[in-house]
Length: 309
Image (cartoon, rainbow, N blue to C red; front, side):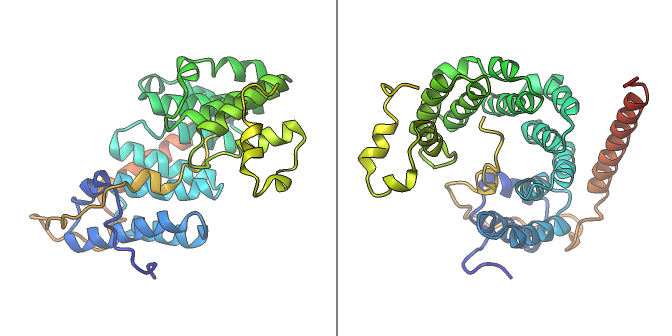
């Protein structure tokens, strides 16, 4: 059952453009379930998954639908299934913007070599700035997981780090750099970048405030209700202020500030099937992903067999 008041018109216009390949009735239904998944993700991941899966059963060939299902799976820590959806969405759309998520899924599965290979691919080098920054944050996390703190730090010394201010990615990049500094043992510098991250984090996407307090040995519960004390923690004069790719909120991917007010156009071809999971194009994309994963598994197995250790 859809949450009360959810219509699907909450979705970003770019998603509606993709849904125009469906019949008007099906597009409206799929849109409502996508919006419901986005709204419920924060508080009820199980229901969010139900709505995302329902949308995928009805519109499996639509890239935004497969991406949305992947994002829900990713948020739940179901990295194998999330990666599959991201790969399928990528094949359907031809866009590489999901590469940071795919690399982080490989990281979550402990497949660090695959993660680094994907991050170094030619497609990764063509990413737009925001996506390239997210990728750098994830790769830094991979390096930390591999016990390479210096490499994690160096990988984030990019021009965007010095320009970080109020951009959407700023707080996350600053946080990631603070984490890398902390991994090298430089608590003073880490505190400075956590503080900068907290100042840039207008939407509360990170726990940078808490990390500053932790490094200062302060119990945040003691500061509740005293906003001035919290602000004092973040002053640059105080000695010593990636985040790993987070859920990045599904509504940030499929829902925009402007609602869609136009009704979807009727298809002027044959009637769309209400459930398009068996659409030949979507099936081909799924088959291609299966073949790619089989090849990757075979390569990994061959590498293990050839490893003398």
